[in-house]
Amino acid sequence: MVLGGRVPTSFAEPATSPLTAQNQNRDDLQKQALAAFNARDFPLAARFLERLISAEPGDYVLREALGQCFVDGGGFAFGTNKEASEKAVREYSEALRLAGETVSDRKDGNEILLIKARLLAGRALAFEVGLEYQSALVDYDDALATALQANAPNDPLIVNQKANVLAALGDWQSVRAFPNHHTPPP
Image (tube, rainbow, N blue to C red; front, side, top):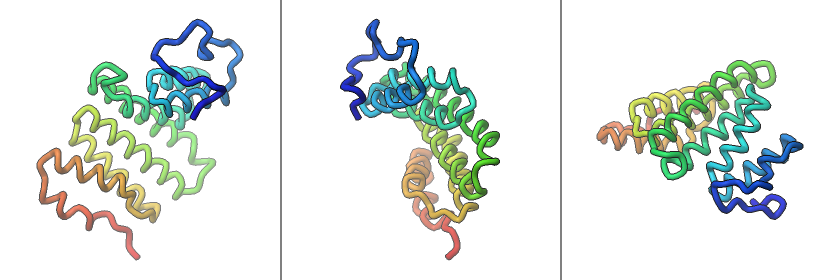
C-alpha cells in the first residue's frame, strides 16, 4: 500500500519525514505504519507504531502489530533473531495482558477467546523466531485450546506451525498424530 505517494525506501528518516511532524494524528500514523509494513520496512513501521503506543499505551492491537513487525523483520531488521524474538515476545505478552483488561467489557465471550488465541499464536511464532521451541509449543497448544473453547475450527496456520515446532523438536510421532488433536466436536 502506498500512502500519499510516500513509499519507505530506507531505514533512516529524512529531516522532513512524516514521523517528525508535530501534528500527525492517529489515522495518519496508522496508515504510515501500514504502508511501511507493506513495503517490508519493518524498522520504520515499528517507529510509527511506537509513536502510536506512546500516545495510547493501553491499545493491545498496537502492541500486537509491533510484535508482528519484530517477527516479520527478524534478525535482518532488528539485530539478531534472538533480539527480535525477545522484543516480539514482550509486545505479544503485553498485548495479552492489555486485551485481558480492556476487551472483556466490549466483546462477547467467544470473541474474547478468539482474540486471546490469536495473540497466543503470535507470541508462539515470536518464540519460534528465537528458536525457543518448547515455549512456542506451549503457546500453540494454548492457542488451539483457547480457540476450541470458543467452538472455532482449527486454524490451518496454527496447526501447521505447531507441526513445524514438533518437527524441529524431533517429535515425529506427535507430528503424525497431530491432525487428530484439538478438533471441535460436530
